[in-house]
Each structure stands twice: as structure tokens, then as C-alpha cells.
Amino acid sequence: MADRAQRGGRGGDGGGAAARSGEGAARAVAARVLARVWGSDAFASAALDAELRRAPALDPRDVGLATELVYGVLRAQAALEARIAELAAKGRWTADPLVRAHVLMGAYSLCFLDRVPSFAAVSEAVDGAQAAGGPRVGAFANAVLRKVAAAVEAGGRPPLADAVVASAPGWLRGALRRSLGRAAAEAFLSAGPVPPPTGLCLSPGEDRESWLAALRGAAPAATFEAGRVSPAAIVARGAGDLRRLPGFGAAWIGQEEGAQALAFALGARPGERVLDACAGRGNKSWLLSRAVLPGGAVDAADLYPAKLSQLRAALSAPPASSEGAGAEGAGAEGGGAGARGGLERAAAFVRETYAVDWTVGAGDVPEGYDRVLVDAPCSGVGTLRRRPEIALRRAADDLPRLADLQVAIARRAATRARDGGRLVFAVCSVLREECEAVAARLAAPADDDLGVRIEPAPFDAELARELAGGGDAFRLLPHVHGTDGYFAAMFVVRRR
Image 1 (cartoon, rainbow, N blue to C red):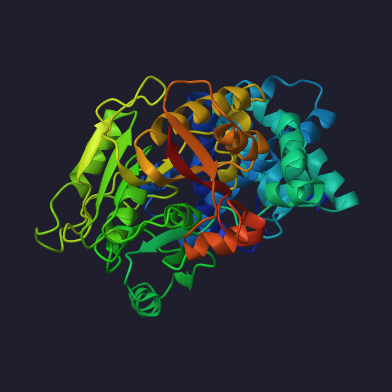
Image 2: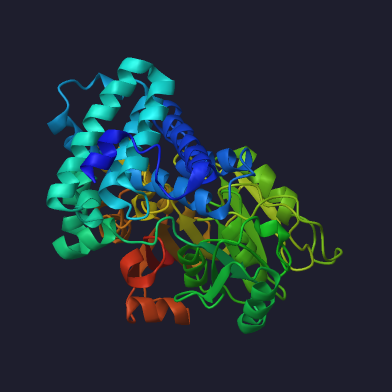
């Protein structure tokens, strides 16, 4: 393998020029995505989607390669850079994001991709690095990647899971071990599949088996399976643009399965008044608005007026209006990242929206809600397999700041519940500092003048009771439940 890598591998690969061209295009896409993640704080998934839309000629295999390179490099970045540092005298190659991307993709391919011959991995990386940084950079990439190839040839490929765990920042590994235990922390960090499947959320009352059959018939090249946690979930791989599938916006929307479970955990029932206190663009509001029919109402609040504008555009028409509006936006994942137009107005209805900063006050949000959902801002650590760049952007000192923010939001939102009303506090994190520690602070006596007590209570929704084992809190984990990572706790609000 090392000899073939040294020769550069331009001939005899058995794949032909077209295959090499496709792989090169896939690597160019992945390099641009990685450069945007490092250089402009872009989210990998959004940047990858944008780049793939600009490269419609890529076949599915090359799309898969680009996707694996982006997520693989981001997850194993520190381990890859450490290996190269052992072999390279200088580290200036990291200064240019495109050069860095091509060198790391080459190293990732050599270490972890069986399907990419070593000579092809080296050759494509050298070409990309040279195009980005010039001949001297290309010569450096050739020399260092040949050394990586020789080391892999001599010692075998290292376990990817070990590289992913080693690449997590030390503070994060420590926080996960305190929260989950050592073995579970490592399982969490290395959990797959990466990227995870797309989640579809069926409206209450829709038959999942019927929709599985319909979706499989509409997109036979994709896979559709029933979710493991949410009774409304279908998980899809290779489905492409959700807007093209039957039922989008009317019978179902795009929503990650664990996020669905949080909405179900609130236990909203027909006829109840519900507040989605941190609604974002409204995926959970959509599900809750259908759960309270007939006779109930859902209001939505958020700090950001722009998100509420998108929510109103989708969910603010009264229930008596016409059915079957056309789809105009892509389905959103993980609680609403992305516009989601064309929802069926006949059953999805948010009555009022409120722009409010809960840390300052309750604004115009009225009192008297039967149930309040607080899906609070957090570190996002639970979504690492979907958003691996989060590990690069968070730090240990973010946790106490975020915990204080979560407590402030939840306590103020609790003042909008009626006496005896229910509140669910939820985060897309699995870290104790944002989960059990915040729940304990909410339940502790407070010396503020808000006039409420927040008491832990068992969940009264069947799905949440099962997840919590009859208790008042549960945690979802990718390596256990197949979802992103979440925490939810139930409380009863008492007026003082």
C-alpha cells in the first residue's frame, strides 16, 4: 500500500477517469464545507446541503463520500491532527482552511475508509492541497500522507470510535463521564449512524404503517422505518428533499424523533391551553396544536421575532380554513432548524405568538395555561452526532452560564401556568450541569417574588412514564434509544 501511495496512484486503479473525477468532486465539496465550518462558524449540515445543491451531477455514492468525509473529519479532527503532527515538522498547513481540509480528508481516508485505495486517497489530497496552496504545499501533503499510509500499512487501521472519543475536548469527556459514566460517555461520543437519519413526525391519528407503505412506494431507493421511541416517528435515509414526498405538511413534517418525544412528554390533551415557551420556528407547536384538538389552544413564545414570523406563516391560520396548502419549505430537524411552509391549516393552529425575553419578564404572555413546555437554550451536546462542530465551539465555562439562563427562563415561564398546571423543562443536552442540576434548582425554594413553587411530579403521558420508569425525569441517548440526546423533567406549578 505504501509503494502505491508513493507512486501517486494515477494509473491502475480499476475505476477509470470518471470514477476519479466523481471522487475528486466529492472531496472538493467536502473541503468547501469544512472550510466554511472552520472559517465562518457555519453548521456542517446546512453547509453540506448547500454545497450538494450546487453539485447536482454527483451520484449517490459520491454524495455519500462527501458526507462521510465532512462528518468523519469533524468528529476525529483532533486525533487526525495529532497523527499528522507526529510526522510533520511544521504545522503551518493548518492556516489555510482548504489545505487543512484536504490533508485531513486524506488522513481520514487512509485511516478509516476501506473503500478508498491508499494511492487514490493520497493523490486526491495532494491535488486538492496543491490547488489551494501551491506546489510546496502539495509536496508537503504528499510527503506526510505517504508517511500516514506507511504507518497504517504497518500497524493497521486504528478504531474510528477511539479516534472520535480522543478528539472530544477534555472538558467534554469529563462532563460526559460525570453525567453518564465512563463506558456510556464513550458510547455516546462514538454513537452512530453518522449523520443520523431524517425524522418524520406524523400528525396524531395518522396510521404509521400506512404511511410507511406509501413512502416506500414513493421513494423505493430510500429506507423508511418506524421510530423506536416516538409513536409518531418514521426515520428515513436517502429520502432527499422531504417536500417531494406524499403527505409532507399535511400528514407529517420533518422532526427528529427525540424532539417529538419531548412534545409528547408534555401530555397535552384535547381542550387544554398550552404554551410553547421557547418555540423557535414551531415544530413542537405543530404537534401540540394537533394534540389539543378539539377545543384546545396553543400559544407560542420565543426570544427571536424572526422565528415567530416563520411560525406564524405556517401555523397561524384558524382551524376552519382550507386543507392541502402547497409545500414551500424543507422539513426541519431537531425542533425546527429551517423554514417549513405549506403546513395543513385545518388542524395545525397556533392561536397567538409572543416575542419575549423570559430572563427579563413575561411580556404580554397571559397566565392560566394548563401546560407549559420550556425547551430551553443549551449547549446542544445531545446533538453531537448531527452537529459535530458543537464540540469545537463550546467550552467548560459555557455550562454554568447556560444553566443560569435555563433556570431563569423556566421559572419565569412557570408563572404563566395555572395553579396545578404542568411544566416540562427540556434540553437537547445530556450533561448533568444542564439536566439534573437545573431540575434540582427549579425544585428548590426560591427567594424571588414570582409567586410560584415548582414541584417535581411524575409524568402523566404514557410515553414519558415509560421512559422515566414512573419517575419525574428521563434522558434520551443515541446509543440507547437511537435518537439525539435529550433530558426532560416534569413539574407541577403551585401558586403561592
